[in-house]
Image: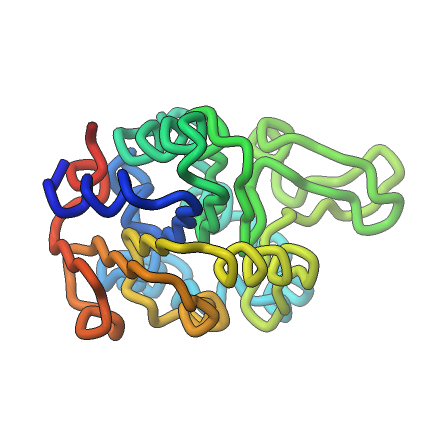
Length: 236
């Protein structure tokens, strides 16, 4: 681990981690917002992910929505990487109070993190729109076409689609944790997706750490800025 980052962590008592797709790419999950992802979607489905994963598209073109969704958003074989395990370790040490993630892959929980606030939901939770019965991701993957509940209702992933708002309780809890943090570590996110990117504005603590391969809007405000992979930066 970077010596300056280690010093910040050692002196911190309430660390919050705000993470994005760059955390999961180290586990082999592609960033669907990248140029390759958008190009692939346009080639195969005639629309970018922002359209394919919108609420209106889900309602109007449910079968095509699921064709894209099953192929591009669920990665059951992905495993937690060094970043996930490092954050879980910091939580066990009493240093980390919460992980706030934009990812929907459940990898933080699999690594052992207990306090995970999923801003955009999870592909591993799916509910019938009619009777609200729960279904795991395996059921979605094994279903032909549109997955239906035993009651006949259409099943919807517990994922925040474009045009949908974030869960108020999750957002409120994320803001509360950031407000109380003495250190905020931003990792694997370019901070361009709102309202998640706006959460940084609630931080009033001492140390702002940014870990991302590319530049972000918070680099100039950071106590420490590391342009490297999150797993490598947090490895200890």
